[in-house]
Length: 170
Image (tube, rainbow, N blue to C red):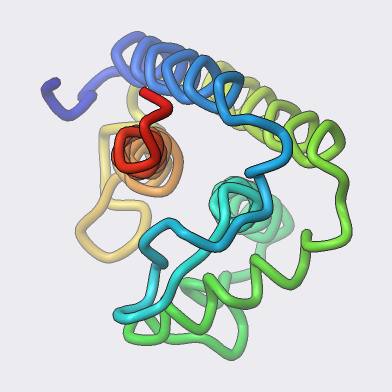
């Protein structure tokens, strides 16, 4: 699919990629949700479906944090305070820890709520805010949202499908 370049395209991509991910997550047997058998976000590491959802929540909530900071007149630390773009594996591990105590239904509900908040954020923006100027370095606001939400949804769905196929679950 083409990279969204309008508010409508971004909203459609968020809806499409999340619906596909949600459908895939619904087919993960509950007893396997915690099994560390998926390729991890850092080289040579493995994670569980639970970790994967925690990762998605972490990025969704980070996007929301960036926007809240900007709205308050503050400049966010990208990607997050204490982390550089070259430390995303370490950031992923923090996301896994941040949400490890959540039961699967609560974890999935938190992801759904974070995605809904992202959609509301996008809906409040006009075309100029989303795609009219760089928001972070050379990236527009819309592109930063897409890179950290719908793109990871697509990647997560692919990881789940590959894992399920290897286990004979697909």
